[in-house]
Amino acid sequence: MALYGPAGFYSSGGRAGRRGDFITSPEVGPLFGAVLSRRIDAEWRRQGEPDVFDVIEVGAGPGTLARSIAAARSAVAQAGALRYTGVETSSSQRTLHPEGITSLESMPSRVRNGMVVGNELLDNLPFRLAVWDDGWREAYVTERGGKWVEVLLPFDVLPPSLPVSGVPHGARAPVQDAAASWVRDALALLDDGCVLVFDYCVGVTAELALRPWREWLRTYRQQQRGVHYLNQPGTQDITTEVCVDQLILAAGEPDSVRSQAQWLSVWGIDELVAEGRQWWEEKSSAPDLRAMTGRSRVREAEALCDPSGLGSFTVLEWTTTRS
Ligand SMILES: C[S@@+](CC[C@H](N)C(=O)[O-])C[C@H]1O[C@@H](n2cnc3c(N)ncnc32)[C@H](O)[C@@H]1O
Figure: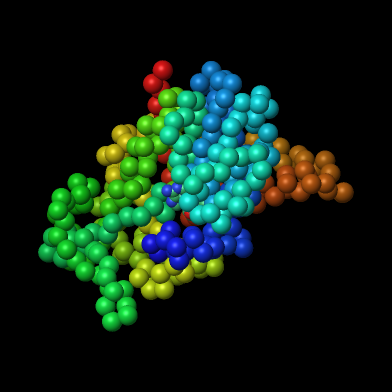
């Protein structure tokens, strides 16, 4: 409700972007989309260059990544085979999507050939909250005296990813059923293709249970960390680090797990930066748009690969082939 209800953060204008509430990789600049275009081309080729290749971007926000991918002029787009769909819950953000893409509120039911992509989606899906109080209990929320407060109740079924020994009193951990089933369902809708997610992740849930919970259950608004998640609901984003073990329980082992910096390197970010430098050097005395774009790639690459920031995000890929 606090994020997606009628008065929720994303229903009332909250969004990624420099003029929004937080910066994501697509919002750093067009380089992220240019690298992803190379990955899209590779997947299109792996599938035998089908005439129609669907890229379904989920949690597409205002459509910034879609714009960068269109500008990158991938081989699949030049062959006229790329069909791009931006799935976004927030209607105000859907109105910002560029022309030439299909905008949907929810996932399509079947994709024959394609890819499903989510950048910083999984951390934003609703999660349950477990609290260790002489055993794991679930935190529910109720209103008391005009304030939102937590009520701890026993679990009907203990989520299997929660650690059961060595847990300090007051420890907390997220139970990410929605994120886990999203990955499983995204894989199930593809006949042939892959699911690619970028997010801030940890390997196992037990890691988060041992960390101060306010480090991983974060709130954001207007480019700053927000307040306690129960305060001023609807005015701030609420997000959790993503537990890879919970995704694996639902969707199986990914085919590839890399840091964002490694993944960008594998898919040619250095080559794109070198190309950008060359565009700049050719025109530095009277720079045109291409020269400016080229120069900005250097700064964008630094931000996207920063080991203490976006570069430390995790990129997970699951591939499926039914035919
Ligand atoms: C953190 S923002 C990321 C936006 C964009 N991907 C980016 O990287 O800049 C997460 C977005 O996912 C959207 N979202 C959340 N749950 C969704 C769902 N089930 N289907 C589609 N979009 C969803 C939110 O409305 C929000 O715009």
